[in-house]
Length: 202
Image (cartoon, rainbow, N blue to C red):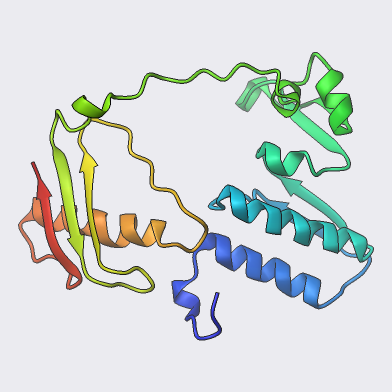
């Protein structure tokens, strides 16, 4: 992240990391920090930096409580409290608490098997390469916007497409400030946003 970046161009993940970095820089002690799902919007490679900051806060004599479900972060915890067993009226109970090893050994824990690697993860059958664009495609061509460079990309219709990348790489800008406004303009017959060169839905 460069010093000349405008605050308006920062992603959610970057803003959250800046706030945590400020807390570490101030070298507070005896403070309780509460973080609500800090891993949202973070690429796995960014999680290492996030957990490092949390460890620094604890090392300085602070307490950290965070609400999260990313197993990479949970494995860094000294103590875990698991709520459940379901959502809404069927939830609201503490179903397990303890160290990571404790949760891995408790049959009532739902996150334990994922922490230990024993849980079976079901994977759906993905579309084959030859049939990927069988239902058509959305073609997007853009100029630069914020920190995102000119883009040329195709999105298969009728498929599950995921946009990923490290925090601040331009994912949200590409989708919410380029793709969505361009499609809305095309549907409504209005002028395309200035940075959009072309949008085609075939």
